[in-house]
Image 1 (cartoon, rainbow, N blue to C red):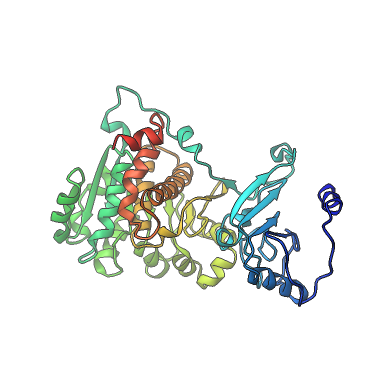
Image 2 (cartoon, helix red, strand yellow):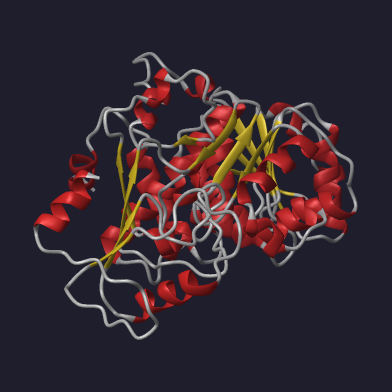
Length: 409
């Protein structure tokens, strides 16, 4: 009300909306529809939103861009495309996932003196992941530490002809500080692994029978990168499921869960589907998943157990403690292998003893921030999954400043 009075005192005139209205000035402020919107935008409101978007003027949205769902980030028919959104009292999950990053622009949260955590009767919709969480979850290592203190991760992947994904996962896993990293892949990929990353203990396996005791020697098994859905991949996944080690399940391992290994439920795994894989796991369409990403993530967690990472803009982590949302990342991540790098990062964190849900939240955070760091260095276009490992290494070393570490490379 004070802002409205100030505008009136400054000579801002109220004019009723009509279709021929010409916008004047250098900035549009969108305060048409708020957080209570639940249905599709229609009528004059739709016409006004379309006129705002067609104006070519920068837009600042108040609380939430008109037409954006506050809980899901979905577009309700149409929505204002804002350069910046000033949101108040409590942050909104719908500003950080789904279509929101494209439509809300830069989000500026102002509590207006309200401490949300003081209202114990209000259950948070999600936790917003922040860069400062990394140092809290990864304290400096003891000076007497040795490799046995930081776990042994095994990557199962790289069916014949699909070795690159498994190599990316193994390298990301190694860069995140795991003590030992093993890779079980098709024999023809062994040489490439040795050349790319000799620190990885690579094993050429023609089938699950060649694995022997390897899965039982690991503290966590990452299964899925380059796995394929043929007999080789099926055997690897069956071996992983038969063991008692925590799992990180990605890519074709998820597709096999939806088809040939349905009905699985575990408390000790992290599933990392993108919207298409999530749709197959829930027997929905990808558009259904994107229409309500938080509901889809929670439904996956209830059906399959453990922790679920629903990838995409505003990645969501659903676990026993609820939802977390990652506001970082960039369009350069829309390239092959990004999910493989994430699965390796997650495997490394689980191997180092972090609780499953903490590892999932931290891994998603580091993955997105590493992509942002790489994009700052050389741009979004041409960003490769292999670029993330070195950036992630900087981020997970809390005793070294990011700028100092970058300068010493």
